Length: 134
Image (cartoon, rainbow, N blue to C red; front, side, top):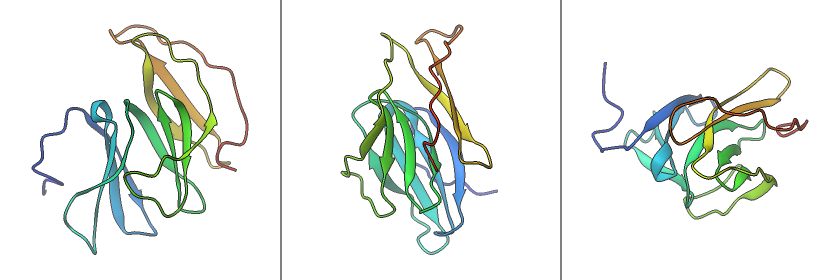
């Protein structure tokens, strides 16, 4: 077993393998960063940064990313860098101290995401919306 990085992350989670890039991606949730490390580029590098926390992300069929943030659900194009603002595709009213906490997609490209309060406890159900990844 080998460490992906020796950098100190504040809350690293959500590793996902990107088949196209042959790279593993993960989040530093509290720092609002997405990182990757690949077969061709074995040095960990920051891929994207937001001004809040990141609750999860998924790859799109075109190679972009869908990211759950404190500003809502953001779509990043297939080619992006840490400063790409992304497009807000769903504004979500996040309560004080609340944040997205995990997300996943199904085989039809539907996104499922949950929220949690700042202190651990029950989250809440968000209104449904179809076609985020379609």
